[in-house]
Image 1: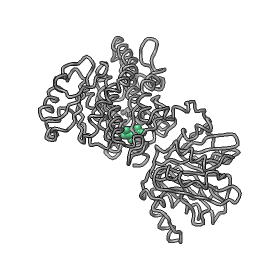
Image 2: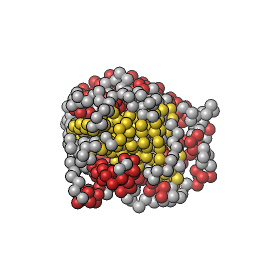
Image 3: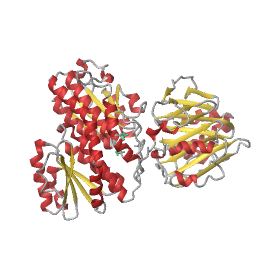
Image 4: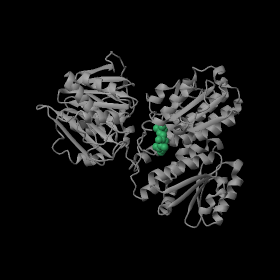
Length: 613
Ligand code: AGP
């Protein structure tokens, strides 16, 4: 993980790359650094600091207005702790070459030993530093920066997006990528590079998304794109149409709250263009598959991590109920090493907000190697997972900045429901009535979510009562169990409270021993088919003194006398309730974390996009 930025042009280089970096802090925030090959004397100036970007900024008084090609980096530690020496940029011994990196160099130990034996002195514990010394060594031999960087890249294995600036070649940046994201922003007499599009949006809307193996030379006059061996390549720029506001907080105190509020719009956008006038699902991205192909898959497998995995759990149940075929759902980090039962008869769904999660990307590649057909559900356009899939159905959530996923999750669910209906309709397993009924109910979901958000004050009240408690359980059956897992994850990651989710029927097989006065038990009870069973489980909790918070449909009153607190949501078709019932859970997690003074958008130890295994 890590965010990188770079700039060449007439603006003050340091100020520009730091402003860009502020839009990437979600990628990592345990240290930051900047380097500029100063105009005039050509001296390389490098400032680094442990901690968030603000710490670095406080040390830049003498550098803000420095002009020259500049690069900057915000780090999420992998190799080497979050210290100032380990912060990027790393630099050559003579201080004339600076390099930033996102990814992991897998063979860095061998390379480091080799360089040390040749007399190179290392200033950090990172894997990255070997690269700058390799570039320096090659430069000393070849006398040309571009060739030196290319030679260094032939020696490293692993994942990288890198950017290099140097006082050997002023007003020029070089960058390259393999397996970590990198984009270029094209301006008039100036050019930009970054890990992600929001970093360049305030300067330019013309963007090139680089692909694995791409190498770019960037000057104020233009960019030259080649592959790693120097062959010319062409990548078409595209115009970013997002409103800049959509990538900013838009008046909310945190991105998380803003993104919770964006859910009705994101859901509506995700439906757009995927329903016909006759109220049927139509997914253009799946048009490439014939009816025979789709019906021919004997096995469906869904693979994802974290929140996206929880969306996959909902989809498993939905697909199985509609298609009457076994559907497996796997955590990506387990899938790859499990010798998975995947073949040419497997339709594999890969779910990821970022499209860059290393475990998920590796699982995709493994499934592909085994012959599966890959359909991904991704939010970030042009990301690695989207590009490497046979087909990609994008969620339309827009940029999600908060580490805790909210709008990406509900839009993943929406896309998965659409896909389930598309498959069932293709296989003629849906009556017209059922198909149209589902479509009408999907269309009603944005309003249902809006109404839950409108009742946030009730959740605020509850959050105030719960914020000082330390043990939380989340229970549910069926679809509610998948939501319980996601709800517990939300609370854990942003409030640092201990929260566990259980299938409600499992409680009596062990966890019930933990229920005592003071323990909060949040009981999702939206599924009519198992409501009575859920009620029994809730009574078991109440009898042991646990504090019961029920999440029920607004017309449901059977918990009124048993629950200590109730959160009511609009009644929707039970299969679709996860999109609605998660919303008060997101709000509760947010409000509890706010009461506890937690760093909501950037929870400790976490980062938005986990691009390492
Ligand atoms: C959830 O709030 C987390 N951000 C995390 O579990 C996330 O869903 C997971 O890392 C997967 O990310 P992806 O969707 O970008 O692949």
